[in-house]
Length: 173
Image 1 (tube, rainbow, N blue to C red):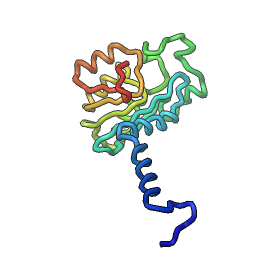
Image 2: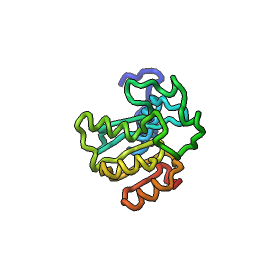
Image 3: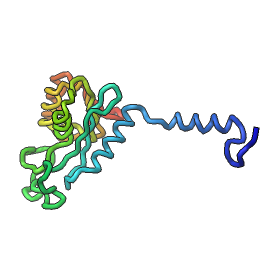
Image 4: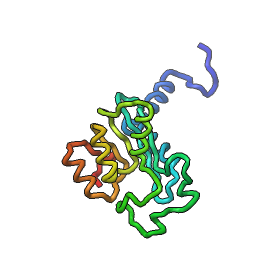
């Protein structure tokens, strides 16, 4: 067999490279969480960049990120109303120019006739109370989050609904 210099002089080298690749391969949860972080990079919110993906049978059904409605100037262009009024995170969600990532994902699915029931939603942050109520009614079966969000009512309502809420690192926040 003809060897190419520097390229796996024996089968053991090839096996070692393949084994290292397999060991570093992300789990499905890690994979989809990496994707929602990329989705979040489209956010135009000045406070928090959030991404969400609705997944069923390892297929992405819809994605969303937080930002102003289509055709409306973004907060990154006109400033943050919540900052101007001194509204803390997790309070008075109605006073905001933007939609949340979960809301935009649900809207995207509805516009394309996609049923989200039975799906898992991956999101960079745990849902607020408004999004929690929407996720319950959409009938997602699982929420996988990267970090917590200061909304106790949301956590309580999700627990009452029986909707599974997990943090990727296994930490309840």
